[in-house]
Length: 153
Image 1: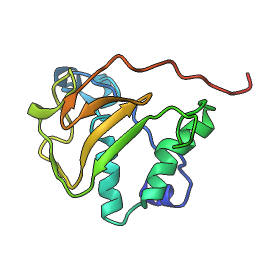
Image 2: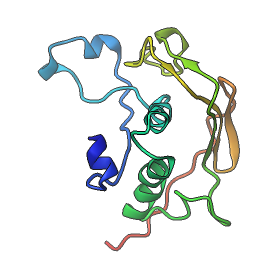
Image 3: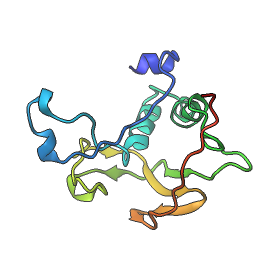
Image 4: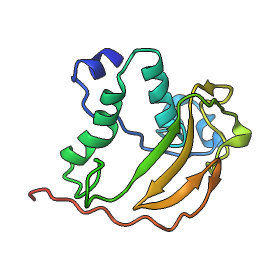
């Protein structure tokens, strides 16, 4: 998968963020609902690949922000540009993030990254220019707005 990302065979990185409970997932594979709770740690996992020279930071930005906006025609998002919505994440590259079931923000209260320590930390997050997360604290959860798509029908 990493080779396909580096070689541009795969052009988008995304997560469906499927926060099923641990009990829902703890059944035989074919009976379990698809997906995992990943959104809280998705960017940190990508930064680990950058830190370990598996991907470049430019590839992560292109595939996780620019390409989805381009592919789906998402208006005024996916880039840092004047007039665009300010959807931003500030990463502290030298602060670690230990992950456990006890410190996740998911309502399902578990993570497949339990026991992992990431080499960086999400410091702050903005949605539509509004600070929504700062230093492990959710500030506001009502600042989202509908996406506008500029795609031919």
